[in-house]
Image (cartoon, rainbow, N blue to C red; front, side, top):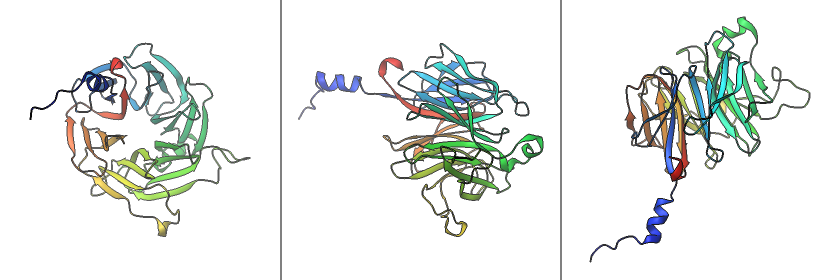
Length: 316
């Protein structure tokens, strides 16, 4: 029997289907890149960034947001915003308002940007226009504390439904002192960012945990790790809702290995896949269980943050 051709209605439905798109930060080239989820159609969206690290995309407003680390030993980090095509670029959090901003998340519920500030030793947030910058967690202050890398905050994730923030403190290189922590989004009444008592350590003794993502439906935490093998240079997964007593903490599952200084991670739940970047200049895809790893791009310089979104066809 001859195969029936799709009807006009079916073709129109396909044509209107959202189009997946990756946005990737090129740390060595100081650029924002855009590409298809199979690695094709790579485009340069923004140039002349200042060591970009974390990125999020808000499809509804048509905006890309990214952090600029600046010079790590200077308090000159910033956050910028641009249209999806790179136009109308604007600095929303100016130099000096944050020290070394790293991973960035956007919470639509409260209309806030959340980020970790590495050398600033803070977890921070602001409105989407960059106003009302505030510190939620402060792990240290001053040059002496700054030399202690166990205080450096790097990755960030937000569980708005349960009112929690998660973040990583990576520790010194390959030291096995990395941690993942959790606290309430809002400061406890009468407490400050530097002395809040609601911080839980979920995992410690990790090589170098970097960026975080959450699967809120399955209650799973995903992260990249830059430390030494066998548990470093990996993608890891563990339950979000764990006992905070050290003896009761589960051992995280290593899903994927042999990254070259893994950094960025983005999850596509509809497609059941994740996307990853590393400082070796590669973009990878894999199933959410770590299987079917594919290299989409290689030798692209040093890559940092990555975001996956579904765009209307007219905006690709």
